[in-house]
Amino acid sequence: MSDLGTTVPFVTDDQSKPVIPPPPFSGAEHTVPTRPISLDPQELGFTRRKPIGWLAPLLLLSTGLRALLAILFGAYMDKRELQNALDDDHFDHSRTADGEIWLDYVADLGDGFDATYSIAWLLAQPSLTVDGTTLPRGRLLLMGGDQVYPLASGDGYESRMKGPYRAALPEAPAGEPRPTLFALPGNHDWYDGLTAFLRLFARRKDGHIGGWRTEQQRSYFAVKLPNNWWLFAVDEQFGAYIDDPQLLYFEKAARQIGPDDRIILMTPSPTWVKAKDDPEIYDSVDYFIRTILAPTQAQIRVLVSGDLHHYARYTSEERELITCGGGGAYLLGTQNLPDTLTVPPRETLTRSRSLSREYQLAARFPDAPTSRKLGWGVFHRVPRRNTGFATMLGIIHTLTMLPMAGAARQGGSIQRLFSIPLLLMLTLILLGTILFARPPGAASAKHARHWILGVSHGLAQIALAAGGTWVWLRLPFQEWAWPGPFVVAAILYGPVIAVLATQLVALYLLVAGFFDVNVNELFAGQGIEHAKSFLRLHIAADGTLTIHPIGVDRICHRWSADPDGEPHTPWLRPEEPLTPHRIEPPIIITDLPVPRF
Image (cartoon, rainbow, N blue to C red; front, side):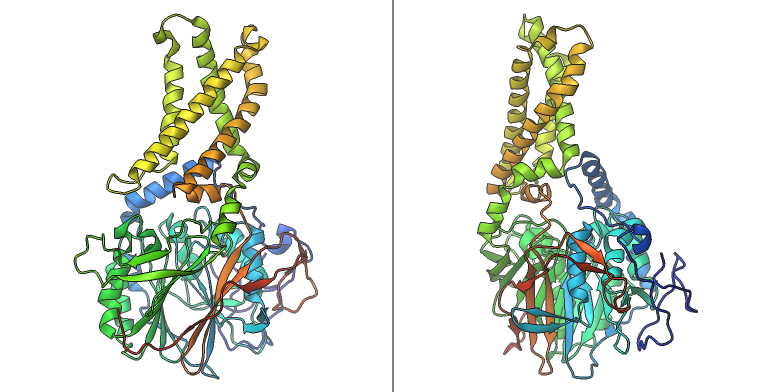
Protein backbone atom coordinates (compact mmCIF):
# COMPACT_ATOMS: atom_id res chain seq x y z
CA MET A 1 0.00 0.00 0.00
CA SER A 2 1.43 3.39 -0.91
CA ASP A 3 1.58 6.46 1.29
CA LEU A 4 -0.95 8.30 -0.91
CA GLY A 5 -4.21 7.24 -2.40
CA THR A 6 -3.24 8.26 -5.93
CA THR A 7 -0.05 9.23 -7.69
CA VAL A 8 1.18 12.78 -7.53
CA PRO A 9 3.78 14.27 -9.86
CA PHE A 10 6.83 14.12 -7.60
CA VAL A 11 9.97 11.97 -7.58
CA THR A 12 9.45 8.51 -6.15
CA ASP A 13 11.72 6.25 -4.13
CA ASP A 14 12.88 2.73 -4.99
CA GLN A 15 9.51 1.24 -4.03
CA SER A 16 7.79 3.70 -6.42
CA LYS A 17 5.92 5.35 -3.59
CA PRO A 18 4.98 9.00 -4.04
CA VAL A 19 6.96 11.46 -1.97
CA ILE A 20 5.46 14.55 -0.39
CA PRO A 21 7.67 17.59 -0.92
CA PRO A 22 9.13 19.57 1.96
CA PRO A 23 7.27 22.47 3.60
CA PRO A 24 5.48 24.75 3.25
CA PHE A 25 2.69 22.18 3.16
CA SER A 26 -0.80 23.48 2.61
CA GLY A 27 -2.51 20.19 1.77
CA ALA A 28 -4.53 21.78 -1.04
CA GLU A 29 -2.46 20.43 -3.93
CA HIS A 30 -2.15 16.88 -2.56
CA THR A 31 -4.49 13.95 -2.44
CA VAL A 32 -5.68 12.68 0.92
CA PRO A 33 -3.98 9.46 2.08
CA THR A 34 -6.17 6.40 2.00
CA ARG A 35 -6.93 5.60 5.63
CA PRO A 36 -7.25 1.93 6.63
CA ILE A 37 -10.61 0.65 7.74
CA SER A 38 -9.19 -2.31 9.67
CA LEU A 39 -5.94 -3.66 11.12
CA ASP A 40 -5.41 -5.93 8.15
CA PRO A 41 -1.83 -5.73 6.80
CA GLN A 42 -3.20 -5.08 3.32
CA GLU A 43 -4.94 -2.01 4.67
CA LEU A 44 -2.02 -0.79 6.78
CA GLY A 45 0.69 -1.47 4.22
CA PHE A 46 2.83 -3.31 6.79
CA THR A 47 2.64 -6.24 9.17
CA ARG A 48 2.25 -5.63 12.88
CA ARG A 49 5.12 -7.64 14.33
CA LYS A 50 5.20 -9.40 17.68
CA PRO A 51 8.01 -8.68 20.14
CA ILE A 52 11.19 -10.54 19.37
CA GLY A 53 11.93 -13.67 21.40
CA TRP A 54 15.55 -12.88 22.11
CA LEU A 55 16.45 -16.38 23.34
CA ALA A 56 15.14 -18.13 20.21
CA PRO A 57 17.93 -20.53 19.11
CA LEU A 58 17.98 -19.51 15.45
CA LEU A 59 17.86 -15.83 16.36
CA LEU A 60 20.72 -16.25 18.83
CA LEU A 61 22.76 -18.02 16.17
CA SER A 62 21.89 -15.58 13.38
CA THR A 63 22.39 -12.44 15.46
CA GLY A 64 25.59 -13.79 16.97
CA LEU A 65 27.05 -14.60 13.56
CA ARG A 66 26.02 -11.26 12.08
CA ALA A 67 27.46 -9.41 15.06
CA LEU A 68 30.70 -11.41 14.79
CA LEU A 69 30.96 -10.71 11.07
CA ALA A 70 30.22 -7.04 11.63
CA ILE A 71 32.96 -6.83 14.25
CA LEU A 72 35.52 -8.86 12.27
CA PHE A 73 34.79 -7.39 8.85
CA GLY A 74 33.07 -4.13 9.78
CA ALA A 75 35.89 -2.11 8.28
CA TYR A 76 35.27 -3.75 4.91
CA MET A 77 31.50 -3.16 5.06
CA ASP A 78 31.87 0.37 6.45
CA LYS A 79 30.02 2.77 4.15
CA ARG A 80 30.92 5.89 6.12
CA GLU A 81 34.02 6.48 3.96
CA LEU A 82 31.78 6.50 0.87
CA GLN A 83 29.60 9.22 2.43
CA ASN A 84 32.45 11.67 1.90
CA ALA A 85 31.10 12.29 -1.62
CA LEU A 86 27.72 13.44 -0.25
CA ASP A 87 26.58 16.89 0.84
CA ASP A 88 28.62 18.01 3.85
CA ASP A 89 26.57 20.98 5.02
CA HIS A 90 25.03 21.19 8.46
CA PHE A 91 21.29 21.74 8.89
CA ASP A 92 19.92 25.07 10.04
CA HIS A 93 16.81 24.95 12.23
CA SER A 94 17.68 28.09 14.17
CA ARG A 95 15.08 30.36 12.58
CA THR A 96 11.66 29.99 14.14
CA ALA A 97 8.78 32.43 14.32
CA ASP A 98 8.86 32.74 18.12
CA GLY A 99 12.58 32.13 18.67
CA GLU A 100 11.87 28.81 20.39
CA ILE A 101 11.91 25.16 19.35
CA TRP A 102 10.65 21.85 20.69
CA LEU A 103 12.51 18.60 20.03
CA ASP A 104 11.70 14.95 20.73
CA TYR A 105 14.25 12.22 21.36
CA VAL A 106 13.51 8.49 21.15
CA ALA A 107 15.77 5.46 20.78
CA ASP A 108 15.64 1.66 20.56
CA LEU A 109 12.23 1.60 18.94
CA GLY A 110 12.00 -1.05 16.23
CA ASP A 111 10.75 -4.09 18.16
CA GLY A 112 7.15 -5.26 18.67
CA PHE A 113 4.33 -3.19 17.20
CA ASP A 114 2.42 -2.48 20.41
CA ALA A 115 5.34 -0.88 22.24
CA THR A 116 6.74 0.91 19.20
CA TYR A 117 3.38 2.31 18.10
CA SER A 118 2.43 3.33 21.65
CA ILE A 119 5.44 5.67 21.74
CA ALA A 120 4.97 6.75 18.10
CA TRP A 121 1.32 7.60 18.84
CA LEU A 122 2.36 9.79 21.77
CA LEU A 123 5.11 11.50 19.78
CA ALA A 124 2.67 12.23 16.94
CA GLN A 125 0.09 13.98 19.11
CA PRO A 126 -0.05 17.78 18.61
CA SER A 127 0.68 18.11 22.30
CA LEU A 128 0.82 16.03 25.46
CA THR A 129 -0.51 16.95 28.86
CA VAL A 130 2.02 15.59 31.32
CA ASP A 131 1.28 16.04 35.00
CA GLY A 132 -0.82 19.12 34.21
CA THR A 133 1.69 20.73 31.81
CA THR A 134 1.11 21.00 28.06
CA LEU A 135 4.12 20.01 25.97
CA PRO A 136 3.83 20.63 22.19
CA ARG A 137 5.03 18.07 19.65
CA GLY A 138 8.66 18.47 18.62
CA ARG A 139 9.57 20.28 15.41
CA LEU A 140 12.46 17.82 15.23
CA LEU A 141 12.24 14.11 15.99
CA LEU A 142 15.63 12.66 16.90
CA MET A 143 16.03 8.89 16.74
CA GLY A 144 19.01 7.76 18.74
CA GLY A 145 19.77 4.32 17.31
CA ASP A 146 18.50 0.77 16.80
CA GLN A 147 15.54 1.76 14.67
CA VAL A 148 15.03 -1.92 13.82
CA TYR A 149 15.52 -5.30 15.51
CA PRO A 150 17.06 -7.79 15.35
CA LEU A 151 18.85 -7.23 12.02
CA ALA A 152 18.70 -4.35 9.57
CA SER A 153 16.74 -5.03 6.37
CA GLY A 154 14.25 -3.23 4.17
CA ASP A 155 11.36 -5.39 5.34
CA GLY A 156 12.42 -5.06 8.97
CA TYR A 157 12.45 -1.26 8.81
CA GLU A 158 9.10 -1.22 7.00
CA SER A 159 7.28 -3.39 9.53
CA ARG A 160 9.01 -2.42 12.76
CA MET A 161 9.68 1.30 12.32
CA LYS A 162 8.55 3.06 9.15
CA GLY A 163 5.06 1.52 9.06
CA PRO A 164 4.18 2.26 12.70
CA TYR A 165 5.50 5.83 12.52
CA ARG A 166 3.69 6.48 9.23
CA ALA A 167 0.49 5.19 10.83
CA ALA A 168 1.01 7.50 13.82
CA LEU A 169 1.52 10.66 11.72
CA PRO A 170 0.35 9.97 8.13
CA GLU A 171 1.06 13.54 7.03
CA ALA A 172 1.76 16.96 8.50
CA PRO A 173 -1.29 19.03 9.47
CA ALA A 174 -2.36 21.44 6.72
CA GLY A 175 -0.87 24.88 7.10
CA GLU A 176 1.88 23.75 9.50
CA PRO A 177 5.55 23.12 8.78
CA ARG A 178 6.31 19.48 8.30
CA PRO A 179 8.34 18.18 11.28
CA THR A 180 11.79 16.83 10.50
CA LEU A 181 13.24 13.46 11.47
CA PHE A 182 16.94 12.77 12.02
CA ALA A 183 18.21 9.26 12.80
CA LEU A 184 21.51 8.01 14.17
CA PRO A 185 22.39 4.33 13.57
CA GLY A 186 22.88 1.93 16.46
CA ASN A 187 24.57 -1.45 16.45
CA HIS A 188 21.51 -3.24 15.03
CA ASP A 189 21.34 -0.70 12.19
CA TRP A 190 24.99 -1.49 11.49
CA TYR A 191 24.71 -5.26 10.99
CA ASP A 192 24.34 -4.88 7.21
CA GLY A 193 26.97 -2.15 6.95
CA LEU A 194 24.32 0.63 7.00
CA THR A 195 22.86 -0.36 3.61
CA ALA A 196 19.19 -0.40 4.65
CA PHE A 197 19.65 2.53 7.04
CA LEU A 198 21.04 4.84 4.36
CA ARG A 199 18.35 3.83 1.88
CA LEU A 200 15.63 4.78 4.33
CA PHE A 201 16.99 7.88 6.07
CA ALA A 202 19.62 9.44 3.82
CA ARG A 203 18.74 8.93 0.17
CA ARG A 204 17.45 12.34 -0.85
CA LYS A 205 16.36 15.73 0.40
CA ASP A 206 12.64 15.22 -0.22
CA GLY A 207 12.36 11.91 1.62
CA HIS A 208 9.77 11.38 4.29
CA ILE A 209 8.37 8.85 6.75
CA GLY A 210 4.70 9.67 7.03
CA GLY A 211 4.36 13.25 8.19
CA TRP A 212 8.04 13.55 9.10
CA ARG A 213 10.46 14.63 6.38
CA THR A 214 14.05 13.40 6.33
CA GLU A 215 16.91 15.77 5.52
CA GLN A 216 20.14 14.01 6.38
CA GLN A 217 22.49 12.78 3.66
CA ARG A 218 24.80 10.82 5.94
CA SER A 219 24.59 8.56 8.96
CA TYR A 220 25.74 11.47 11.15
CA PHE A 221 24.69 15.12 11.22
CA ALA A 222 25.07 18.55 12.77
CA VAL A 223 22.05 20.78 13.36
CA LYS A 224 22.08 24.46 14.27
CA LEU A 225 19.29 25.23 16.75
CA PRO A 226 17.93 28.56 18.02
CA ASN A 227 19.65 30.75 20.57
CA ASN A 228 23.20 29.47 20.22
CA TRP A 229 22.41 25.78 20.62
CA TRP A 230 23.84 23.06 18.38
CA LEU A 231 23.15 19.34 18.02
CA PHE A 232 25.97 17.01 16.97
CA ALA A 233 25.17 13.32 16.32
CA VAL A 234 28.24 11.09 16.00
CA ASP A 235 28.22 7.69 14.27
CA GLU A 236 30.62 5.24 15.91
CA GLN A 237 31.09 1.84 14.32
CA PHE A 238 30.44 -0.40 17.35
CA GLY A 239 32.35 2.12 19.47
CA ALA A 240 35.55 1.41 17.56
CA TYR A 241 36.52 4.66 15.88
CA ILE A 242 35.29 7.76 14.07
CA ASP A 243 36.22 7.84 10.38
CA ASP A 244 38.13 10.71 8.76
CA PRO A 245 35.29 11.93 6.47
CA GLN A 246 33.07 12.21 9.53
CA LEU A 247 35.71 14.15 11.43
CA LEU A 248 36.11 16.49 8.45
CA TYR A 249 32.33 16.97 8.32
CA PHE A 250 32.18 17.97 11.98
CA GLU A 251 35.30 20.11 11.72
CA LYS A 252 33.54 22.14 9.03
CA ALA A 253 30.41 22.51 11.16
CA ALA A 254 32.49 23.39 14.23
CA ARG A 255 33.90 26.42 12.40
CA GLN A 256 30.46 27.99 12.84
CA ILE A 257 30.57 27.53 16.62
CA GLY A 258 31.96 30.03 19.12
CA PRO A 259 32.47 30.35 22.88
CA ASP A 260 28.89 31.53 23.42
CA ASP A 261 27.39 28.36 21.91
CA ARG A 262 26.13 25.27 23.70
CA ILE A 263 26.12 21.73 22.37
CA ILE A 264 23.95 18.62 22.71
CA LEU A 265 25.97 15.55 21.70
CA MET A 266 24.14 12.42 20.54
CA THR A 267 26.01 9.11 20.58
CA PRO A 268 24.83 5.61 19.63
CA SER A 269 25.67 4.11 23.02
CA PRO A 270 26.11 5.44 26.59
CA THR A 271 29.79 4.61 26.69
CA TRP A 272 30.10 6.69 29.87
CA VAL A 273 28.15 3.92 31.65
CA LYS A 274 29.76 0.99 29.83
CA ALA A 275 33.22 2.36 30.59
CA LYS A 276 32.96 1.08 34.15
CA ASP A 277 33.60 -2.41 32.74
CA ASP A 278 35.55 -1.42 29.60
CA PRO A 279 37.50 1.81 30.24
CA GLU A 280 38.59 2.18 26.62
CA ILE A 281 35.09 2.17 25.15
CA TYR A 282 34.65 5.89 25.92
CA ASP A 283 37.88 6.85 24.13
CA SER A 284 36.32 7.68 20.74
CA VAL A 285 33.72 10.02 22.29
CA ASP A 286 36.39 11.69 24.37
CA TYR A 287 38.60 12.04 21.29
CA PHE A 288 35.73 13.71 19.43
CA ILE A 289 35.15 16.14 22.28
CA ARG A 290 38.86 16.98 22.60
CA THR A 291 39.65 17.40 18.91
CA ILE A 292 36.41 18.77 17.40
CA LEU A 293 34.43 20.49 20.13
CA ALA A 294 36.93 21.67 22.71
CA PRO A 295 38.76 24.06 20.32
CA THR A 296 35.49 25.96 19.80
CA GLN A 297 35.34 26.76 23.55
CA ALA A 298 31.61 26.06 23.42
CA GLN A 299 29.87 24.44 26.36
CA ILE A 300 28.97 20.75 25.94
CA ARG A 301 25.98 20.61 28.25
CA VAL A 302 24.26 17.33 27.37
CA LEU A 303 25.33 13.90 26.16
CA VAL A 304 22.38 11.69 25.24
CA SER A 305 22.13 8.13 24.02
CA GLY A 306 19.94 5.06 23.85
CA ASP A 307 21.14 1.43 23.53
CA LEU A 308 20.42 0.57 27.17
CA HIS A 309 16.65 0.14 27.34
CA HIS A 310 15.80 2.35 30.30
CA TYR A 311 16.13 5.93 31.47
CA ALA A 312 19.07 7.07 33.57
CA ARG A 313 20.67 10.46 34.18
CA TYR A 314 24.08 11.19 35.63
CA THR A 315 24.82 14.79 36.49
CA SER A 316 27.63 17.15 37.34
CA GLU A 317 27.88 20.92 37.51
CA GLU A 318 28.98 21.12 33.86
CA ARG A 319 27.12 18.36 32.06
CA GLU A 320 24.21 15.92 31.95
CA LEU A 321 24.76 12.33 30.78
CA ILE A 322 21.39 10.87 29.77
CA THR A 323 20.47 7.38 28.65
CA CYS A 324 16.97 7.10 27.20
CA GLY A 325 16.46 3.84 25.33
CA GLY A 326 12.79 3.27 26.04
CA GLY A 327 11.33 3.66 22.54
CA GLY A 328 9.93 0.16 22.15
CA ALA A 329 12.49 -2.60 22.78
CA TYR A 330 12.44 -4.87 25.83
CA LEU A 331 12.98 -3.20 29.19
CA LEU A 332 16.41 -3.39 30.83
CA GLY A 333 16.44 -3.01 34.62
CA THR A 334 18.39 -0.28 36.37
CA GLN A 335 19.26 -2.07 39.61
CA ASN A 336 22.94 -2.55 38.67
CA LEU A 337 23.68 1.03 37.65
CA PRO A 338 26.52 2.52 39.70
CA ASP A 339 25.76 5.49 41.93
CA THR A 340 28.83 7.35 40.67
CA LEU A 341 30.69 7.47 37.36
CA THR A 342 34.13 8.81 36.59
CA VAL A 343 34.21 10.13 33.03
CA PRO A 344 36.55 9.68 31.27
CA PRO A 345 37.59 6.65 33.36
CA ARG A 346 41.01 6.98 34.94
CA GLU A 347 41.86 3.42 33.86
CA THR A 348 41.91 4.27 30.17
CA LEU A 349 45.29 3.98 28.46
CA THR A 350 44.76 7.19 26.48
CA ARG A 351 47.45 9.56 27.66
CA SER A 352 45.82 12.75 26.39
CA ARG A 353 42.33 12.09 27.73
CA SER A 354 40.14 14.89 29.03
CA LEU A 355 40.09 15.77 32.69
CA SER A 356 38.13 13.09 34.59
CA ARG A 357 35.07 14.26 36.51
CA GLU A 358 32.62 12.63 38.88
CA TYR A 359 28.98 12.24 37.87
CA GLN A 360 26.23 11.29 40.30
CA LEU A 361 23.21 9.16 39.44
CA ALA A 362 20.30 11.62 39.66
CA ALA A 363 17.34 9.61 38.34
CA ARG A 364 16.40 6.30 36.75
CA PHE A 365 13.29 4.65 35.37
CA PRO A 366 12.18 2.14 36.41
CA ASP A 367 13.72 2.52 39.84
CA ALA A 368 15.96 -0.11 41.40
CA PRO A 369 13.31 -1.83 43.62
CA THR A 370 10.92 -2.11 40.66
CA SER A 371 13.70 -3.48 38.47
CA ARG A 372 14.61 -6.14 41.03
CA LYS A 373 10.97 -7.11 41.35
CA LEU A 374 10.65 -7.40 37.56
CA GLY A 375 13.73 -9.61 37.52
CA TRP A 376 11.86 -12.27 39.52
CA GLY A 377 9.41 -12.59 36.64
CA VAL A 378 12.08 -14.55 34.76
CA PHE A 379 10.59 -17.84 35.94
CA HIS A 380 7.31 -17.42 34.10
CA ARG A 381 8.24 -15.02 31.28
CA VAL A 382 11.25 -16.86 29.83
CA PRO A 383 9.38 -20.15 29.13
CA ARG A 384 6.32 -18.30 27.86
CA ARG A 385 8.16 -15.96 25.50
CA ASN A 386 10.92 -18.35 24.35
CA THR A 387 9.33 -21.69 23.55
CA GLY A 388 12.02 -22.41 20.96
CA PHE A 389 14.71 -21.97 23.60
CA ALA A 390 12.90 -24.38 25.94
CA THR A 391 12.55 -26.87 23.09
CA MET A 392 16.29 -26.66 22.39
CA LEU A 393 17.08 -27.35 26.04
CA GLY A 394 14.70 -30.32 26.01
CA ILE A 395 16.44 -31.79 22.95
CA ILE A 396 19.91 -31.30 24.46
CA HIS A 397 18.91 -32.92 27.73
CA THR A 398 17.19 -35.82 26.01
CA LEU A 399 20.24 -36.47 23.83
CA THR A 400 22.36 -36.35 27.00
CA MET A 401 20.11 -38.67 28.99
CA LEU A 402 20.00 -41.46 26.39
CA PRO A 403 23.78 -42.15 26.24
CA MET A 404 24.05 -41.52 29.99
CA ALA A 405 21.36 -44.12 30.65
CA GLY A 406 22.96 -46.55 28.19
CA ALA A 407 26.36 -46.18 29.85
CA ALA A 408 24.84 -46.60 33.31
CA ARG A 409 23.06 -49.81 32.29
CA GLN A 410 26.32 -51.33 31.07
CA GLY A 411 27.96 -50.92 34.46
CA GLY A 412 31.58 -51.91 34.83
CA SER A 413 34.53 -49.57 34.67
CA ILE A 414 34.38 -45.81 34.85
CA GLN A 415 35.66 -45.68 31.26
CA ARG A 416 32.43 -47.22 30.00
CA LEU A 417 30.38 -44.62 31.76
CA PHE A 418 31.93 -41.85 29.68
CA SER A 419 31.10 -42.91 26.14
CA ILE A 420 31.99 -40.72 23.19
CA PRO A 421 28.38 -39.50 22.59
CA LEU A 422 28.01 -38.71 26.28
CA LEU A 423 31.30 -36.84 26.42
CA LEU A 424 30.27 -34.81 23.38
CA MET A 425 26.98 -33.81 25.01
CA LEU A 426 28.61 -32.95 28.35
CA THR A 427 31.22 -30.85 26.56
CA LEU A 428 28.46 -29.12 24.57
CA ILE A 429 26.55 -28.26 27.74
CA LEU A 430 29.59 -26.94 29.58
CA LEU A 431 30.89 -24.98 26.60
CA GLY A 432 27.43 -23.52 25.91
CA THR A 433 26.91 -22.28 29.46
CA ILE A 434 30.37 -20.70 29.57
CA LEU A 435 29.78 -18.87 26.29
CA PHE A 436 26.33 -17.84 27.53
CA ALA A 437 28.02 -16.16 30.51
CA ARG A 438 30.04 -14.09 27.99
CA PRO A 439 33.37 -13.97 29.86
CA PRO A 440 35.26 -10.73 29.16
CA GLY A 441 38.99 -10.49 28.59
CA ALA A 442 41.43 -11.52 31.28
CA ALA A 443 42.16 -7.87 32.08
CA SER A 444 38.57 -7.25 33.19
CA ALA A 445 37.85 -7.17 36.91
CA LYS A 446 34.72 -9.28 36.23
CA HIS A 447 36.62 -11.98 34.32
CA ALA A 448 36.60 -14.54 37.12
CA ARG A 449 32.96 -14.17 38.09
CA HIS A 450 31.79 -14.78 34.52
CA TRP A 451 33.81 -18.01 34.36
CA ILE A 452 32.70 -19.16 37.80
CA LEU A 453 29.04 -18.52 37.06
CA GLY A 454 29.26 -20.06 33.59
CA VAL A 455 30.94 -23.24 34.84
CA SER A 456 28.56 -23.47 37.81
CA HIS A 457 25.60 -23.17 35.48
CA GLY A 458 27.02 -25.91 33.26
CA LEU A 459 27.59 -28.24 36.21
CA ALA A 460 24.04 -27.55 37.41
CA GLN A 461 22.64 -28.50 33.99
CA ILE A 462 24.77 -31.67 34.00
CA ALA A 463 23.50 -32.50 37.49
CA LEU A 464 19.94 -32.04 36.21
CA ALA A 465 20.73 -34.41 33.33
CA ALA A 466 22.10 -36.97 35.79
CA GLY A 467 19.00 -36.64 37.95
CA GLY A 468 16.77 -37.06 34.93
CA THR A 469 18.73 -40.17 33.95
CA TRP A 470 18.31 -41.61 37.45
CA VAL A 471 14.54 -41.16 37.21
CA TRP A 472 14.46 -42.55 33.66
CA LEU A 473 16.26 -45.74 34.72
CA ARG A 474 13.51 -46.41 37.25
CA LEU A 475 10.74 -46.21 34.67
CA PRO A 476 9.61 -49.22 32.63
CA PHE A 477 10.08 -47.49 29.27
CA GLN A 478 13.83 -47.98 29.21
CA GLU A 479 13.33 -51.75 29.04
CA TRP A 480 11.27 -51.57 25.86
CA ALA A 481 12.65 -52.65 22.51
CA TRP A 482 14.20 -49.98 20.31
CA PRO A 483 12.90 -47.46 19.18
CA GLY A 484 10.35 -47.49 22.01
CA PRO A 485 12.57 -45.77 24.59
CA PHE A 486 13.60 -43.10 22.10
CA VAL A 487 9.98 -42.34 21.15
CA VAL A 488 8.86 -42.14 24.78
CA ALA A 489 11.88 -39.99 25.62
CA ALA A 490 10.98 -37.57 22.83
CA ILE A 491 7.27 -37.43 23.70
CA LEU A 492 7.36 -37.60 27.50
CA TYR A 493 10.83 -37.00 28.88
CA GLY A 494 11.77 -34.17 26.51
CA PRO A 495 8.92 -31.78 27.38
CA VAL A 496 9.26 -32.39 31.13
CA ILE A 497 13.02 -31.91 31.20
CA ALA A 498 12.64 -28.85 28.95
CA VAL A 499 10.51 -27.14 31.59
CA LEU A 500 12.95 -28.03 34.36
CA ALA A 501 16.02 -26.98 32.35
CA THR A 502 14.39 -23.66 31.44
CA GLN A 503 13.60 -23.00 35.09
CA LEU A 504 17.22 -23.76 35.91
CA VAL A 505 18.33 -21.22 33.29
CA ALA A 506 15.92 -18.71 34.82
CA LEU A 507 17.39 -19.36 38.27
CA TYR A 508 20.89 -18.92 36.87
CA LEU A 509 19.94 -15.59 35.23
CA LEU A 510 18.42 -14.31 38.45
CA VAL A 511 21.48 -15.28 40.52
CA ALA A 512 23.95 -14.05 37.90
CA GLY A 513 22.11 -10.73 37.74
CA PHE A 514 22.98 -10.07 41.39
CA PHE A 515 26.66 -10.27 40.35
CA ASP A 516 26.15 -7.99 37.33
CA VAL A 517 26.49 -10.89 34.90
CA ASN A 518 23.98 -11.64 32.11
CA VAL A 519 21.76 -8.74 33.25
CA ASN A 520 20.84 -8.04 29.63
CA GLU A 521 19.81 -11.68 29.09
CA LEU A 522 17.82 -11.63 32.33
CA PHE A 523 15.58 -8.93 30.89
CA ALA A 524 15.85 -9.72 27.17
CA GLY A 525 14.57 -13.22 27.87
CA GLN A 526 11.52 -11.78 29.62
CA GLY A 527 10.70 -9.33 26.82
CA ILE A 528 9.00 -6.81 29.14
CA GLU A 529 7.21 -4.30 26.91
CA HIS A 530 6.13 -1.77 29.54
CA ALA A 531 8.01 1.09 31.27
CA LYS A 532 8.85 3.04 28.12
CA SER A 533 10.42 6.49 27.92
CA PHE A 534 11.38 9.37 25.64
CA LEU A 535 12.54 12.98 25.97
CA ARG A 536 10.79 16.20 25.03
CA LEU A 537 13.18 19.15 24.93
CA HIS A 538 12.46 22.88 24.73
CA ILE A 539 14.84 25.68 23.86
CA ALA A 540 13.28 28.93 25.05
CA ALA A 541 13.77 32.40 23.56
CA ASP A 542 16.26 33.24 26.32
CA GLY A 543 18.36 30.18 25.46
CA THR A 544 17.29 28.04 28.42
CA LEU A 545 17.14 24.33 27.58
CA THR A 546 14.48 22.37 29.46
CA ILE A 547 14.47 18.57 29.19
CA HIS A 548 11.26 16.75 30.07
CA PRO A 549 11.93 13.01 30.66
CA ILE A 550 8.61 11.28 29.98
CA GLY A 551 7.72 7.78 31.08
CA VAL A 552 4.87 5.45 30.15
CA ASP A 553 4.19 2.78 32.76
CA ARG A 554 2.01 0.61 30.53
CA ILE A 555 1.78 0.43 26.75
CA CYS A 556 -1.39 -0.30 24.80
CA HIS A 557 -2.13 -3.76 23.37
CA ARG A 558 -5.57 -3.07 21.86
CA TRP A 559 -5.99 -0.83 18.82
CA SER A 560 -8.83 0.07 16.49
CA ALA A 561 -8.81 1.68 13.06
CA ASP A 562 -9.93 5.31 12.70
CA PRO A 563 -11.05 5.49 9.05
CA ASP A 564 -12.93 8.78 9.51
CA GLY A 565 -10.11 10.73 11.13
CA GLU A 566 -8.43 13.81 9.71
CA PRO A 567 -5.63 13.09 7.21
CA HIS A 568 -2.93 13.97 9.75
CA THR A 569 -4.38 12.01 12.67
CA PRO A 570 -3.17 8.49 13.54
CA TRP A 571 -4.64 5.63 11.56
CA LEU A 572 -5.06 3.57 14.74
CA ARG A 573 -6.33 4.76 18.10
CA PRO A 574 -5.63 3.08 21.46
CA GLU A 575 -8.43 1.19 23.17
CA GLU A 576 -6.49 1.28 26.44
CA PRO A 577 -5.24 4.42 28.19
CA LEU A 578 -1.77 5.68 27.32
CA THR A 579 -0.78 7.93 30.19
CA PRO A 580 2.57 9.74 30.00
CA HIS A 581 4.10 11.07 33.21
CA ARG A 582 7.24 12.83 34.32
CA ILE A 583 10.07 10.50 35.25
CA GLU A 584 11.65 13.34 37.23
CA PRO A 585 11.18 17.12 37.41
CA PRO A 586 12.22 19.05 34.29
CA ILE A 587 15.97 19.41 33.84
CA ILE A 588 16.73 23.10 33.32
CA ILE A 589 20.06 23.96 31.70
CA THR A 590 21.40 27.49 31.46
CA ASP A 591 24.81 28.99 30.74
CA LEU A 592 27.83 28.06 32.79
CA PRO A 593 29.89 30.92 34.22
CA VAL A 594 32.98 29.59 32.40
CA PRO A 595 33.11 27.08 29.51
CA ARG A 596 34.58 23.74 30.62
CA PHE A 597 35.58 20.50 28.85
